Image (cartoon, rainbow, N blue to C red; front, side, top):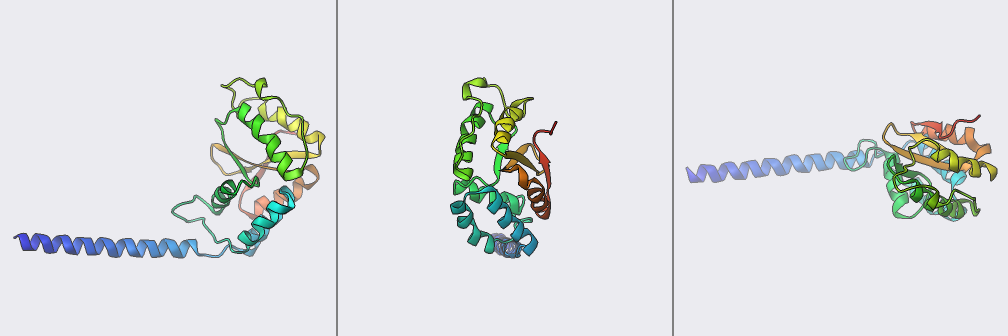
Length: 197
């Protein structure tokens, strides 16, 4: 009886290992699926429009080798993979903020993004303008940042990922149609964070 039980445990363990191995191979093959040239070029063009030359060149070879992660076990999409990599490298191409992100923290990070990406200073609201309970999703917060951006010829656009976070691109106003086109080539909608009057 003990021998049958041991044999059953061994067979079960081998079956589990085989299943795990085949799932791992399946996921590896999914992750190694190449990205379409349209998507690859869209990422490159967005980087060129939204980043400084140094960060753009840092991402160029990455985009050349980027695979499709839309069915990955670790990432919800290729876009989320790129967001994660950019975040790790302190590159502000796709700026991902949870809807509960504090407005005073947003007031702290925005000047840093603008200085790095566009080598410009923008007179944003001071951090103390917002109390600790104010989040970026509250009425008037994005508007208070958009107006000073517009004065410098810049704007914030939203990539609609159908989630409760804001994936924000900062770019020149004159490039809005081009940026929107490239976001659509990635399979997402581009929205203005602040409606134009």
